[in-house]
Image (cartoon, rainbow, N blue to C red; front, side, top):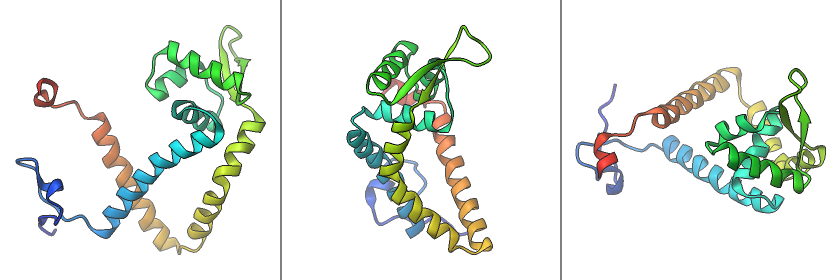
Length: 171
């Protein structure tokens, strides 16, 4: 294993006691992808005429219908805020409330076909380019990319799940 070296960017080495490391091209590009993803959410939300939280709710609803309480949990907002998000998506024709198929006391929120088509129209070209790039990879190269991306997801998850430092809470 190689020893971490000081990065040329002093801002990344500024905190006392921080491990110094070299940001390779792959790490730089991963950071850029993460930043562009945040910017893309903002831009696409504006194009679809919704807030960023509403757009994030639509992304979750694209995967499967879920209830307002689950939307609140996924977006890390209160159930009251989630209700407002759902109300606005319904008013804009992007979602519908439906009775839950197994429990009629509950409702689930379903993305409308028109909202699916609109989001797909904006994101489709990107997904097509990514699919073409993926198809061009050999099985071996794809395995390396998958291993790297899983590791990146694990690293991000570890930061998100970490308990705040007691110094940071008081400082």
